[in-house]
Image (cartoon, rainbow, N blue to C red):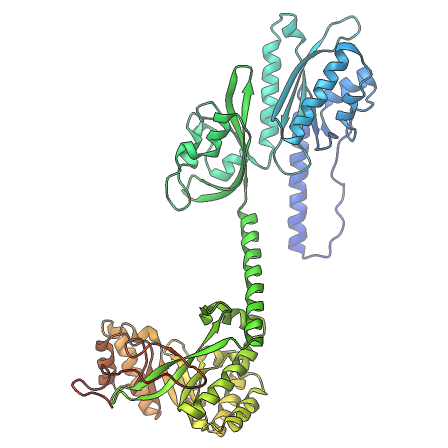
Amino acid sequence: MTRARAPATMPKSTAHPGLATSQLQRTRQLTAARDLLQGTLDSLTAHIAVLDRRGEIIITNLAWNAFALANRGGAGVGVGRNYLAACDVADVDGLADALASRAADGLREIITGASAEFTMEYPCHGPGAPRWFLMRAARYEGSGAARVVVAHEDITARWLGASEAGRALLAARNYMRAVADNMGEGLFTLDPAGQVIYMNAAAEELLGWTTQELEGMVLHEVTHSHRPDGSPLPAEDCPILRARRDGVTVRIEEDHFMDRDGRYLPVAYTATPVVTDEGIEGCVVILQDITERKAQRQHLERHVETLGWIGRVQEALAQDRFVLYAQPIVDVRTGEVAQRELLLRMREPSGEIISPASFLPVAEQYGLIGDIDRWVIARASEIAAVSGAVELNLSARSMGDRTILDYIEQCIQRTGADPRNLVFEITETALVADEAAALAFADRLQSLGCKLALDDFGTGYGGFTYLKRFPVDFLKIDVEFVRDLATNPASHHVVAAVAMLARAFDLKTVAEGVEDEDTLQMLRALGIEFAQGYHIARPSLVADGLMPAPPALTNVGPKGKRPR
């Protein structure tokens, strides 16, 4: 008998020992599963062969090989031979020739997907003894080369009226179940009402139920009655029902089944009706877990989206489509605008304004942030020369760029801006990334006459240490502590502590995210000098280097006193 075997020894691998061990274990498991399948097939009296999409035989059992050798010397019907071709050129005539042609046509319909099953009874009389056989071919929808399972059963006893027919049918059923239980895909067989008759081992593992637990239950109601968003999926919309109702094979590339634990499992499946002379007798459902495939597709989609953003950022730089918005920072005691924070946006060709959260992460990851920072520095210098003090954000990557300070100095000289009107915001994250580079940047910035603000203060663990080492001018209190200042005692304690700390270091404080009058008044009471937020003013577009007109700050300043 021709049979594929695993090699006796495995080639040496230069990979990691753990990986090699895992591969060896998987090879042994696959070999054991293959041998179990072959052993199961060999134990059957039916003549079994498995064909690929070209009709070539890739697996046979002992009964098939023995019959071929006894009747035709094995020519054309062994492993590696094309069974379809053997049927086409069968050296017979009359009825036998017509039956061989009919068998070939039936197999081709299964291979092409035109049908799921083909059966045919035919005579094959031997010397001195009449014999009849039942040929049954079924489509295999799983992965790998296998596409059709062909079984020839000796039904002579049935034709002769003997009682052996029942045993032949039982053998065929046992064979099909043995094959199904060795499939990698999950398999269900359902009756005409959609009730579970059988599940193979892979289906039990995927969904967590056993055949005994689901037998007699409607598959749709157990695993398929709701969509992943929780909305109901009516039975009439179920593709599996359509296969049973309309007698057509349904292939679904992406859907979800619910497992025993209530989790949605992404699957692809095929539902094929079982059609007999009496009509549709149910259907066979073969499903695959597509979790990994779906994750790979989502990763690819994210990658494609990232590449798209890279192109959009590069075009915006080349076409000068970045814009700056300005948000006032006011003195909480007088209500006067002390300076403005410049906020970066990107304008699309359509005019749509894009938030930095959409493009800055990509720009930082793919090395475009340096060009963006230089664009902001140049525009900020122009604005500071005309409209007064501004704050601008700088990335950690630029702080490590030794040429960026020379560029800042050149912009100041070119525009004539007062360096004291340029306040550079840096975050604790940037300081942690490269403390030495950040310290060198801060010292040189101070020597130029510019100022430094430590942004998001209070959210990290090293803030106090940085106050001792870095020449900081402003502490910007993180919005997380300002947003609920009026209602959360913990936030109140943090802001009060920052205010006291700033006074000890002779620093100014700025509260971000002020959204109501109570918060503003509480900040004043705690001694916070400056504030910004939607309650004071929303960011406005900076046009041609000129700041927008100051907002009507009637709600800022001491109660009962209108600010100038």
